[in-house]
Image 1: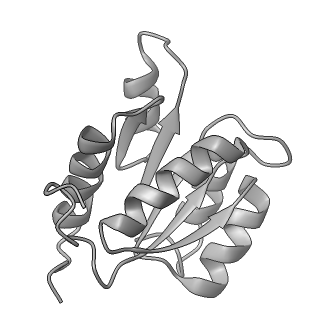
Image 2: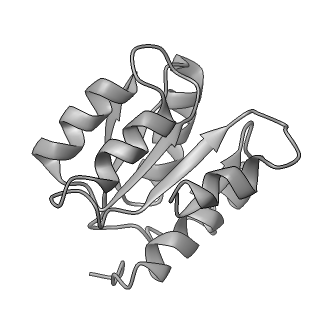
Length: 138
């Protein structure tokens, strides 16, 4: 196992929402190698349902999806007291110059561009996990 993983996310339940099967599989694999338990959903509506029932510690979502996109899912999460405090990271392949500002203005905790390099992906996710004030060394 690469040394940068180090099971630093042990004890974390992460919801990964993406309609692209390859992106979902790759991200889930790296998060699991880092010690997280990973739930997946292939659209925002299903992601919202999973978030409501499972209450994950962190959500990573694509922005462009059918049925309900990541923007809509984020707003629904933030307007529900049960899920409002869950940090949500936007995953997107959009290369628009102001996408990061739009994402942060919409209430996302962070933005990670796809395709992602594993070391950078895990590092960025860990920063959010640690910034949320949770102890990932349980």
